[in-house]
Image (cartoon, rainbow, N blue to C red; front, side, top):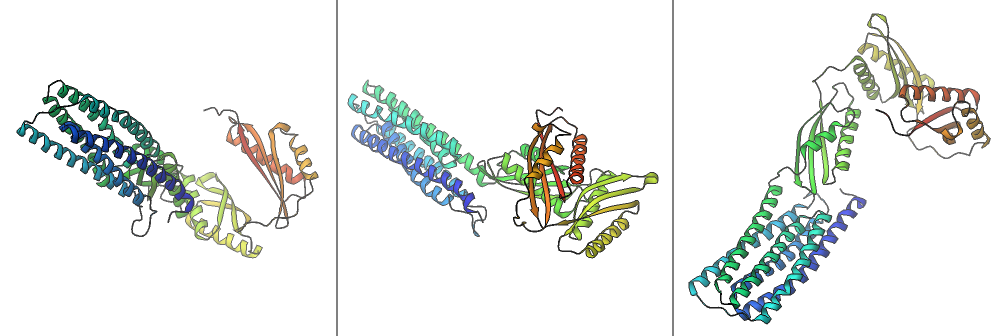
Length: 472
């Protein structure tokens, strides 16, 4: 289910859409009343057609309000993907109303041609009708901007609908001028032009909504693939699919990873791919990654040994880090690693687990000649606060570090007590273009010296921060 924090932006968006629709509804009703009144007084078919078109505008606003209210509901068991399609249905209904309007106006045109009734237009009524044009301009500008800002289908459809009013009203003014000068046929010409504009807007709206309702692709597959391939561990991406709407797309894809990779690591890669797609493509609401083993290329020995060791440690409920693999003569290997074991275990229990781990590794990889295992307790809970250590130790650490790096490179020195042990966490800076191996060697030397020079410390960690541009 969607959390409250995730719902707030969605609810704010729909409230904004509703405010715009209410404003446009009031404006359209005002324009509709004026046009229909002028059309009934003059009998001008083009004016009546334009008034009917504005009445459809008002109806579409009401439909939009109901559709947006439904679309704003959170996902539930009946609609696990949410109710956003109701906004698309609302846009579809607006397109249908436009087709109805075009049909009715077309019938009126045929009836006028058959009857041949003359028309008379007064200049005051013409001036009054012309006053509705600035209102239409304001509606179009406000609704277009809101549609782009809020990424709303219903506002975009209604904006296209309302935009036709500008052309319609302009053509009607021209036809009224022509009729007042004795050219009655301009009324029929303007009315026919109105019908063509209405049909154009209707088919544009119906085309967009039909694509979303028939699950046409809603996200750029190439961009999705590019983002997915940028995640570490991804070897190949295929079968990228999407559906929904451009502002609420659902994406699924297949990602190939190393076949020897553990389930937990493969899941972590899938989660990272999903996070990147949603973060870098604002229109994507959700992403689903299917993991597959890659057989496209043979991993190198380091990858195969590393993946197998991590798979064994995961299966035994152990952690593993600081893995180093050395090649010996005759295709034999020496492995160094830190094995993480729950802190509530005794030394005997931890040693027995390490023996079992090493036995499984040798069974899988007979080529491994030696395994050097460093046992390390891992804490599975938040450590409670302890008394602050002597502040003079921080000064000692800074003085010791200053013999190797400048004082300005030492950003932070933090000392913490936990489980009866004293830990030092130091943050220093190095140039961004420093080779990673050199940076690691420096941090190892500094950590070793801190532990040697300050006996009170049980753990020392150096965190490196790059400064300046990296050189590639």
